[in-house]
Image 1 (tube, rainbow, N blue to C red):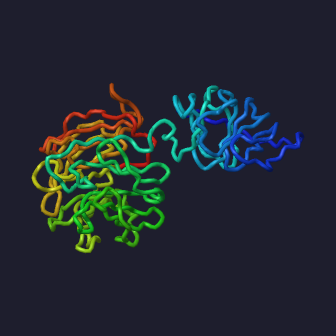
Image 2 (cartoon, one colour):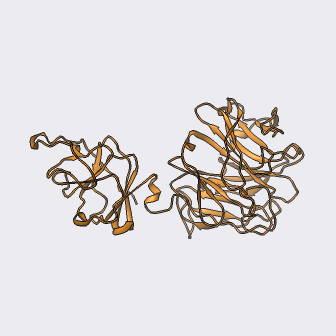
Image 3 (cartoon, rainbow, N blue to C red):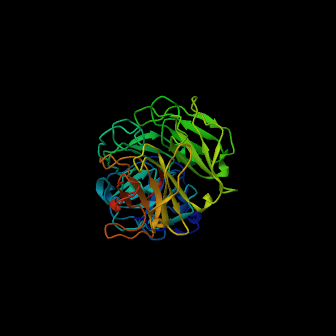
Length: 405
């Protein structure tokens, strides 16, 4: 839970002759202080509503506040991290967050008069949740070679948080940090399939600043190896991209991309060197009418990967069956309501019944008896015919992230 800060100008208590010199360690402060006396890199608090008087400060986690317990009335966060304030000691109970404000221009009430411990975290969701959400996948009857980065027969997910870290979710409701930072530099992150030719699933990322395309080879453990440049530029011209699987029929994974200026759909075939070959036109126009493309694997059990696309003008979901180097006539698999979904995850068979499935993460306007609003993980079992079973909300904690794939 987050309480908005009051924007106020920091004041200088020159009349009291206060300075910020000599502040060392958590809690050390002058007998009297003001907002402007909070040092850069610290979180500070006062017992008064106007940020005057004795000041508390810290830049490390504090499990118990001692004599300052339940006394915070004004706070300012001049650190580069989120500050979580809990109503119980040892970071228990409810946490209220304060976003980073190194300049110290925003301050106000703490959100509660019962603050008993303080913790610093990289993302706001970590005040009350783990950095990554829970993901569970049943063991599939056979390895699919699709959606499984560690080859354990469980469909897994990669999640990017708002701090630019990358997390690997292996399907047992745990998470592993596989990218310590910098992943917010990409405006498209896609998988599936083995592009490098080593039998392991890889990740492709588009760099927003340059339009370059990078291949991150999978290691077979959920982590990623050193990246390789496979597109020198120009990829920002594509509005949508999907790592598809093998459409061309040469045994290598391919990439599909929609050209924003024309609405054309292009196939970029994988090569023996891990790069992408000369593109082939798949759709002559109209693909800008789709705002989500999902390489979902073999949904209709014909031995070829298929494409799922959302039509925003109608909220419908369409299946484009893969053929020998082209896409067949589309089939309606969702008659409406799909605009309430922010993210689509086609990661293979996570129900363990031998059929590929689909998962989604909801937007604010999603409504269900079990979950509503942002961050509901909803799973749709595949039937093996291309159709989807009834969606079921299975988790409510997929919020405060920066993408999943």
